[in-house]
Length: 356
Ligand code: NAD
Image 1 (cartoon, rainbow, N blue to C red):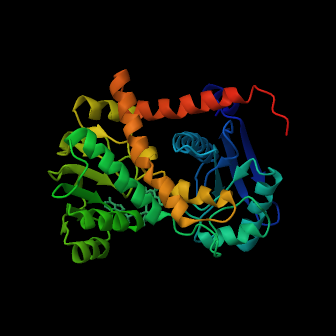
Image 2: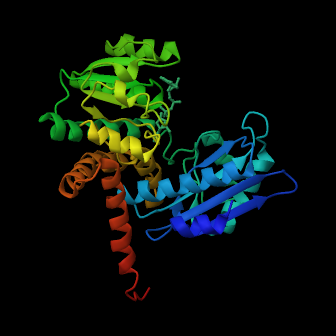
């Protein structure tokens, strides 16, 4: 892969390859854009078969964080890291500490946090070597982000319902939940409290059953959850769930959920638009998690403050929908525009000299 050509095309700042002889650590850290502040993005651990796969993944994920952080109104840039290895087999204290040391060398240009394949406990280990890690298990840290993510998704759903269905209330609305994990369960609770009718599916049947038992939801086969007739289809499991196979089968007015990277391709975003289905861009509506962890940067973490900021996802969804309407563009492009405009506007401020 022509790395510098790729970085030039998509505006990346830096890609760091890390190797530690003692622990065997092989990792990559990508910084996409730090106009708004230090880059924040999790550390993924995955047994990539090819180095190029790891490079493409870390670059793609770092760029995604630039957009998510900017659109959420955070003073943070976008970055991400990957450790190449099997988290079940290759993870050792030495490896995690070696990674922490590399993060420290960046002097605060990059903050790491947990992601798939790493845990809060792993962040505690990295903390022995770096000041620039968030989401620790200690009190005063931000802890499990999923209740804040779910709260933000619920708020965003209401904004979308107001625009698309003419009423923000979800009472009596049918919502199909794909995934009843951390985010899905917590979201189901908000929706049930509001009086929504829930249909749920999870490949882990016990999780779907729990939502059925606690919130009176109906369970269906995971293979058909996207095709359930409903007002809102809410993906809270995996990525690329909106694709050429599923979109023709959707029977909803709105898609709004917490899962990352819901669109398999940009063309799928265009197709939803063509079919008159309102897609609420994933990184706008699921920003509660990053809003939660970023609150640690205010000094002492404060859950009430984080919740208040996550509540504003409602207004952010409205903003994106307004851009889409005014400019006649699909919502996923409107979200990108919101993020890019903020980066451009705030970036210009930096041209003015400020005595410190
Ligand atoms: P989780 O692992 O707790 O839950 C995911 C659930 O989806 C699991 O119960 C799993 O069994 C189920 N699942 C997997 N494949 C499925 C399928 N084909 N059909 C139905 N169910 C399926 O994860 P989570 O923390 O709840 O996160 C869910 C999604 O939201 C992920 O895409 C994650 O990246 C994204 N997200 C989470 C947060 C957060 O704060 N946890 C923040 C932002 C984005």
